[in-house]
Image (cartoon, rainbow, N blue to C red; front, side, top):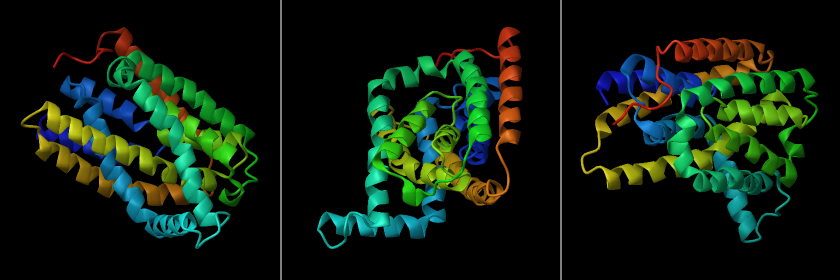
Length: 279
C-alpha cells in the first residue's frame, strides 16, 4: 500500500465511520476505483477503525470511565447492579455478543466473499430503505435509561449486520434503535458505546494477525491512516451528535441510494471490478 492510498483511505474512514453510509463500502469503492487494490483488505479496515474508535474513547471519555468504574464496583458488591452506569456496562457486554460470535463464525466470508462490490452496492440500497423506514416510523419515546437486556442484545444483532460492507455500523444500530422506539440521540450514543469492545477486539486481533502473517508489514502507512482517521473522526462525532438532535436521516438515505446506483453502473459497465484484485 502506498502512502497516498493510506492517507486517502484514512480520510475516508474518518469521514464515513460514524455516518450511516458505511465506511467499509467507501473504503472498498475508493480503493478499487482509484488504486486498483483492495484497500489493504479487511485487516487494514479493522486496524484503521482503531483510529476512529480512539475518537469515540476521547469524545465519550467521561461516560466511559464512569461506566467502567460503576460496573467494576458492581462486580464486588460495592455498587448495586441496578445502578444506571453499572447496568450500561452489562448491556454493552450483552450487546457485543452477537457481533463477536457471528464475526468468528463467518470470518472467512468477511475477509473474502462479502467484500464483493455487488453485495456492497446491494446493501447500500437495502439499508437505505431500512433506515428510511426506521426514520419514518420513529416514535422517539425511549431514552437509554429504559434500555433493557432484550433491547441491548437486539441492538447487538443490528450492529452485527455491519459485518457486511455497505450496511454501516452506525446506520444499522441507529435504525434498530429507532424501530425499538429510542430517540436518535439515545440510539446513536449506545451505538458508539456498543462499538467499542467489538472494534477494539477486531482491530487488535488483526494487528497480531498481520504481524504473524507478514514479517515486514507496512506499519508506516497503516499508522498514518489511523491517526488521520482519529482526527477527522472526532470532528465528525461532534458534528453528528448535534445534527441528529434537530434533523432526520433523509439526506443520508438519499446519498446511499445515489451511491448504490452509481456503483451498480460502474460495475455493470466494467469500470470497477466487483472482486478484489489479486495480491
